[in-house]
Length: 227
Image (cartoon, rainbow, N blue to C red; front, side, top):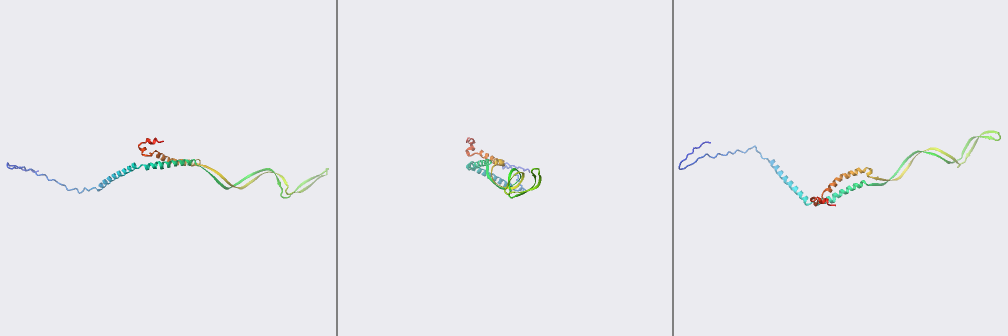
């Protein structure tokens, strides 16, 4: 800073001081660029926050102002439906199928039939017989050898003793009606039916634990006090 000489006189005193320093203004930095992406993200974030708040507010308002349809669906439709469905599965396990099966078939029969009995045989035609014979003369006259010929007449009954094995091989027709009674639980359906019940039991229990009205929400003891 340069020094200035101060001249003072008695008639007109004046004080001369240094002039104010000039302000130096630097030119703007050309490397600094605006950040449009950051501004866009800030605007989007603010919009998302406001939109989320509005949606949540509307949902809460709807739930508070119109809970009756939800309670009605739970108490009148969903819960009774699941209870009846579980009862139907339980009844299915106790079901018995009764029917009649018609059988029409042929069955081969092969066996040996033992035959041991006395019977009479009827001749269907005359039977000639020839047999050697010895004739003894009376009074010690000696013996004569000869042949005896005779005919057994037709329709003559001859007693016969049978003792033999008779082979039997034939086919027997089978026509019958067989009554059938099937218990589903005993026929192997029991585990499958119980599995179906186990699928829906947790859902039924969860629905039964939910409140049936706004009163039960604010006063939980009101639900337990119901018979």
